[in-house]
Image (cartoon, rainbow over all chains, first blue to last red; front, side, top):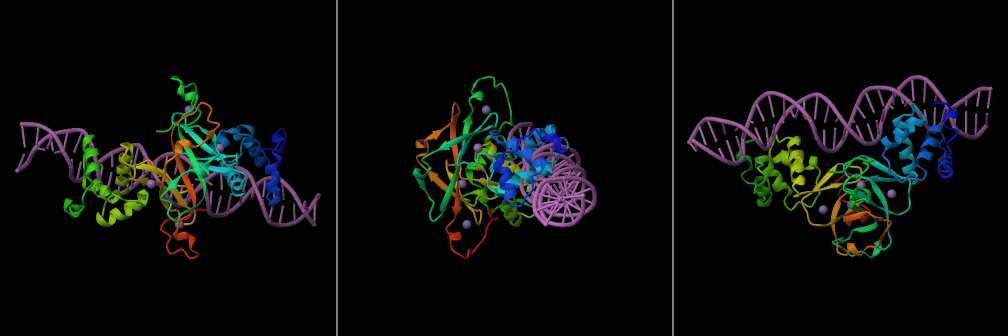
Length: 157
Length: 157
DNA sequence: TGGCTAATCTGCAACCGCTGCAGATTAGGA
DNA sequence: TCCTAATCTGCAGCGGTTGCAGATTAGCCA
Ligand SMILES: [Mn+2]
Ligand SMILES: [Mn+2]
Ligand SMILES: [Zn+2]
Ligand SMILES: [Zn+2]
C-alpha cells in the first residue's frame, strides 16, 4: 500500500498531534484509522473498522487496527466499551457519556446524564466511587416498528 | 462421583423446582452448583465455581459448570455480569441491582439504586428503554488502605 | 422394583476475540 | 540521503467458551 493510496484522507489533526507528542509515528495506516474514527458514532468493533479499512487500503492488517486502537485508548483519545456478549467496541467520543443498547439490533446510542451524582446509592459501605457507567436496555427507534429495516449489528439473545 | 458424595449438600429448593418444572433433570452436579451459588455474593466466574466444585466432587467437568450456569441464566435464575477485561461473572442475586467494581482488586459489590427513573437522560430520541445497569468504578474499602491485604481477583489495568 | 430412554455428563476439539513474536518495512530526525 | 527505532504484517498462541459424540443416568412407567 503506497502512501498515495491515502493522500485523499485527512488525518484528524488532534490524533496526529497526540501520536507525535509521544514520539509515535504517524503512518498511513494510522491516518486512515484516524479518519475512519473521526465523528464515527457507530461504536465499531476492531473487525468492523478493519473491514472498512481493508477496502480503502488493501493489505492493512487486523493486528495494526488493534494496535492503533489500543494506543489511542491508552492515551485517552478513545473510550473502550464492552457490549454484552460481543467483542469490544471503540468510541471516539471521549466526553463523559453513557449508552443505550438495542435489544434487537444491538446498536449502541450515546446518552447523556446530567444528575448522576444525585442518585441515591445504598450498600456502598466504604467503597469510594469516582465514576459510573450506565447502559440502558430497550428498543431503538428503528426496531420499534414491526418490520425492522436493517440489522446493522448482531442482535442480542 | 457417587451420589453419596453430595448427600451433605442441600440443593436450594427453588432452583431444583425450576429445573424440574421445565423437564430438566436434577443431577448431583447441578445440586452441588445450586448449593455453591446459594447466597453467594462473590460474583464468581465459571472457572472459580469449577475450582470449588472440583474439590467437593472430583471429576466434575468444567463443561457441566458452564452448561448449568447457562441453563440457570436462560431461566432467569441467574444474572450474567460482564466484568471489564475478564471472564463472565455469574450472579445468583436476581434482584434489580447494580455493581461497584474495585479498580485495584476487581471485586464486584452489590449496589442498590432507588431513584433511577428520576435520572435526566438526554439524546434518547425515540429509544424506548426498559432497564438500566450501572457499574460504578473506584476503590473498595479494603483496597483504600496503603497495603491491601488480599487480592481475591485479578486487578484491572 | 427393574427397564427404558431422553437428558445429561465428560473429554476433547474447535472457535472467537485478542495478543506475543519475529522478520521485513518505513517514518522522521540528523 | 542515511540511519534506526518504531511500525507493519502474518502467524502462532492463549484464555474463555461452545459444539460434538460416546458413555452414563435421572426419572417415568409397567
Ligand atoms: Mn458512545
Ligand atoms: Mn450482584
Ligand atoms: Zn435496534
Ligand atoms: Zn479492592
